[in-house]
Every structure is written in C-alpha cells, then in structure tokens.
Length: 312
Image 1: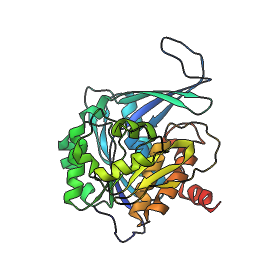
Image 2: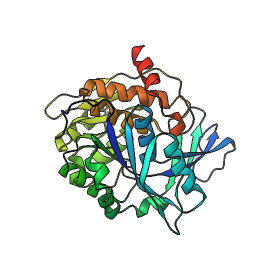
Image 3: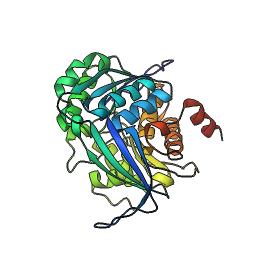
C-alpha cells in the first residue's frame, strides 16, 4: 500500500466523483412512508459526495482537481462555478449534452438527522474514458479520493490509474453497494459510516464498530476507518487491534455532509504524512464542524476552524 511519503507544503488531491445540486427542506421530523409533513425552509445548495469532498479538501488548504460531469441544464453552470469559487480545479469537469445534472432531495430534521434521495443525472455518464482523459491530474496527485455515486467501472478505472502511478487511494464507499468488487477493498484507506459498514460487512457492529474496521482491514484496506456519528470513529490497520477516537462535542444542525468533510480532511491529513491516529482525529474534527452548519459545501470548515477545535 502507498502511504509514507514526504509531506508537501500544499497536498495535491484529485477527486473523481459526483457533482449534484441539493434541494434541501427543513422539517420538524422526517415523514414516514405515505405521509406528508410540512417543511419550514428550502434552499438550493451545491453538493454531491465528490464535489463536497473536493471542497472540503480545498478549504483545508489542498490543491484540488475535480473529475466529473454536470448536465447542460440550469444547474450545470452553477455547480461548476461553485467549485471554482471554492478553489477547486474544474478542467476535467465535462458538460453532458441533453442530460440533467445530478440532483439530491434532502429532508433535514431539526435534530440534524436527514434523509436523501439522489438522481444520478450526468454523474451516470462519467466513464473510464473520462478517467483516461484525466490520467495526468490523477498521476500528479498525492491522493485520489473516490466514492460510489459514479458507475462502478469508472471508480475501478480511477483506482487502477492511481495505483499504476503509485498514488494513494482513499475510498468513501457511499452509497454502500449490494456487492462491492474485491478490488475496491484493496485501497490505502477506506472510510464508511456505520450504516455503510454494516451493509458492506454483514456484521452487526455490536462491539461499537471495531469488528467492522477489523473486517475491512483484513479484506485488504491499508487503513480501515468507520465513522460513528456522535460516538466518534474507530480505525484499524492490518494485524492491529481497532482504536477508538472519541467524538467532539458540537451542536448538530445538519449532518448531511459530515462524512464528506471527514473524507476530504482524511485525504489532506494523510497527504501531509500524518500518522493514522492524527489523521483520524483531524478528519473527525472537520466532520464535527460540518454538522454545525446547514448544507453541504458551505458547511465545509476552514483549516483555521479545524485547528482551533483540535486545540481545545
């Protein structure tokens, strides 16, 4: 596995992933099947797991390139401009003719819990050919960050290009697939949340998540991390016992992009050469800060904010 590299002043991260427009409605509680509830707020906010993670890394000081697609609809240009505004490179964000951009409808409870429905749109048209066209920015990166909102063959192609170039690969396996290809376990770091870990491993996680992290490390991940929401995180390296990282105490407003903040921050920390304990703590701080604000990309914390929380 790739791992021990000389830390750079500014990490270089390439994200191959989804770009969505989030349609966010705040509700006192999420509806049950067949039920309608009244909302008390609505916002249109740029999102998508890939784009969120790209913004998270950029806000933490990394030089970030985004590889993905938007549609030729009203959202496409706005999504690309939002990435640029956050300092993310968009030279490999293509426009798909005759196709809508990816969209997510998100219900957010006052407690911060959420429910999300995603329509892939242009994200479903990101192909291995797009990955081949972006091979230069993948090979030039310290870390390539992947998720599973793109076609599986595209994610596999991106991982393969990165491995051939000796570039670290981090996978955020979300949404969790019914069956994950064996090649995707063989990454330098994997970071599901507890729902995704349960689905991928088939384990109950009764020990607080340690069994999930151990299972993933034994399957081939160089560093297996499971985020546990308000209960913190647990990580495991091959041949080692799982290690629990305590949570940060914050007031939750919207948990929508907590995992994306964690993944983006993890990519930054590992690219800087931090050991696992420090990297997971750094990523946990970013994830905690993200839940204190509404929305996805606007909620990604800055380096100063993360450093201040760690100092406390």
